[in-house]
Structure formats: C-alpha cells, structure tokens
Image 1 (cartoon, one colour):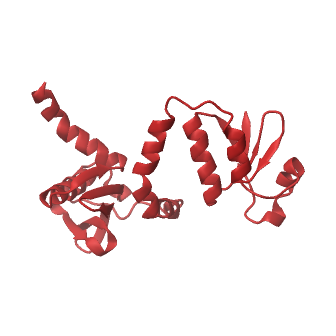
Image 2: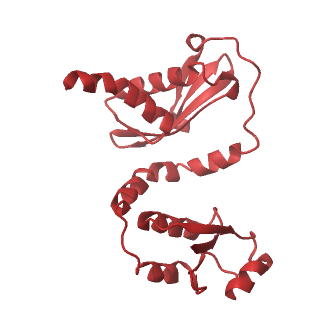
Image 3: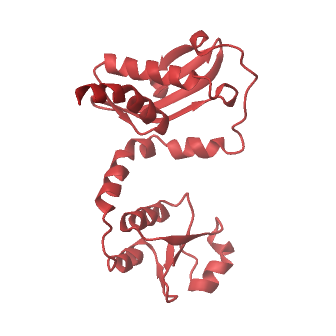
Length: 213
C-alpha cells in the first residue's frame, strides 16, 4: 500500500490524489503538520519535510509532484481513468467557486437554527446574482441556499444547503425547484454538480424518459 504524506490545503497534494484516483490506486493518507519545521515524523521517514511525498511499497520516497508523477507513470491506466478526468473537469466550477472553503467553514459551526413551524410554501425563493446563489427565506431569516456558477449558456449548481431545523420537510426541494425553473426560463443548460440538485433533476425527468420508451 502506498503512503502519501500530504495536507488537504496543499494544491500539489490534491493533484497527486487526483492522479491516484484516475489510476485506481489505493493509498494511505498521512496528515502532516502545517509547518515544515514541525514535521519530525516525515523527516524520519523520508529525510525531507516537503509535501507531497509518496512512499512506495519498498519504502522508497518520491518527493514532490514531478518525482511522484514519474513513479506513477509506471502504473497501468485504470479502466475508469478517462471518466474520472471528465468528472474532474466537470467539477472545475465548484473548485473555482471555492466550494471546498465554504464547506470547511461549516465544520463544527453547522448548527440548527430556531425551530421552524412554517411550511415550504411559506418561504420565499430570492435570486441573489451578485452572490451567485438562490436563497430560501422566511422573512429576514435565510434558511437555505443554492450556489451556482455561470458558464456561458450553462448554469452549474455546485452546492445546496438547508438549515438543519428545516431538513426533511421539503424546503430544499422548494428551493431547488424554483432555482432550476428560473434557470430554464432563461434558456440555460442545467449542470447539476450538487447531489441534491442532481437527484431533483433525475426525479423530474425520469417520468419523461419512461413515456418515451
């Protein structure tokens, strides 16, 4: 099993993980300390404190993206490699929109708001183009959002969230339904990277597919 010394914030580490994914190679991720001078374990294992560092099965360390790539070129391509690369490119808007940073910011801070007695029909969907999102509001309270990125005549939905106090009650569906309908009325192609939006689009189009069979 390969061992990758890395950190999630490091773009070079991220690039190596993507290549390992495309190759279908399993590996152990070892998290390092944020500052190089504190990486005693990494120095003891490899003689250096640089990331990313990939340690092969025989203990040989490959330090830095270029050396790691040279080593990985010896691996046979995975049957899913090209599909993974396509998905990587499809998710470019989410990376450019800094969706990872928004999701990281939610860790330990994503708490339910005050209980909500209202129904989804009581909420209002508001388009906030300057922020690239649709918001679901109850009065002055925002209880949901659907982030997107525009790419020409395409709209890429990257992330959807609803206040935990409202989960499982149809609020998310109300938000996504109006956001998708609004985008379609503008003649935009829907690209649902967000799993919630993708599930909504699939549920809506499945009856149409059955009728066409």
